[in-house]
Length: 378
Image 1 (cartoon, rainbow, N blue to C red):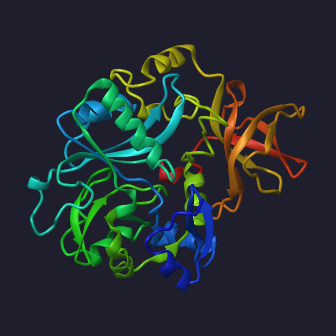
Image 2 (image 1 turned 180 degrees about the vertical axis):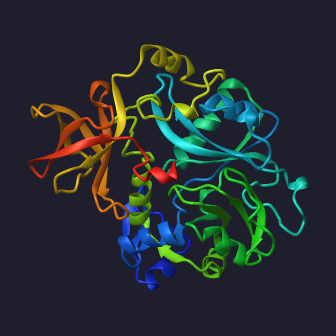
Image 3 (image 1 turned 90 degrees about the vertical axis):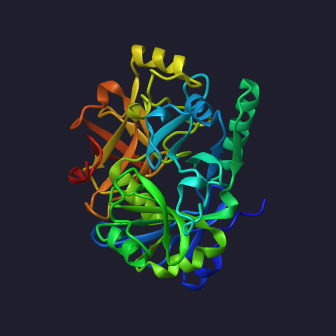
């Protein structure tokens, strides 16, 4: 099957980007170097093309109920412009995907000079599945809508829009300089429609790096206009990965996978995204799981010995008995140390516990560490 391409695939190629397959998409992995791009985000500002992320709108009289019953958090807490992180779980409480949910304004509530972008005029919610999951989640939403007899419109608009992330200490200034009005007053986890370089964008103060910044959703045919207007270091998925690992953020399909590594939100350390006072698919299973407690926990690991941990490497105790597995690992550009994420039995999960990671057949000393690894980003 041919890979899906972001709207700026040709532009990135001309810029000298190298590409990788990710979630069925042909995406830039780096433009200059992962280290340089990572450093730009931590110290200044970088811009990522994240158009591989899905965009699904949900509107109609029963939109709120449909979202409430298919995501783990409480969407009734959201005012227009608010967002929240949530899990999408199956009946057994296993995470199918994680997502950001935005309550977006109706067309009638938006200044006519800033026409709504992803709302299709009648949407109440916009949620963001991970790369390659948009069709699956669209089918899930429409199937449950029909089963429950709800009146809601669900649209997969992934191919109609581009999505950029502008991240770093200077990110707000960079977007503000390109915007036609004020955006620096948008609070964290809030968003609104704004004009950037004359293009209507959904501008949300959210991100996946641990730094301040915005995520912008805009029409695909206007992608180059907005990309060129924002002065920032172009960054690929390589730096996005090292940045999120330093924060201990989950990567769908790698730190959890419903088929290859099924996890519930308590094991994956995202209990804050679960509200058991709401009714959603998987809620009863998660109530039982919470009461029983978890046997394994998602933890950070920092290697003491030299070596770079990678996905799939074994974690052992000091007697070389396998106790867990690395799900993500890298050499941290900020810390200069090898770090990893993974699951270990709860009796090994306390920070400071000495374990070992098998790197290319060699056992390397490591210590359990709380995340984020960058403590000033908590």
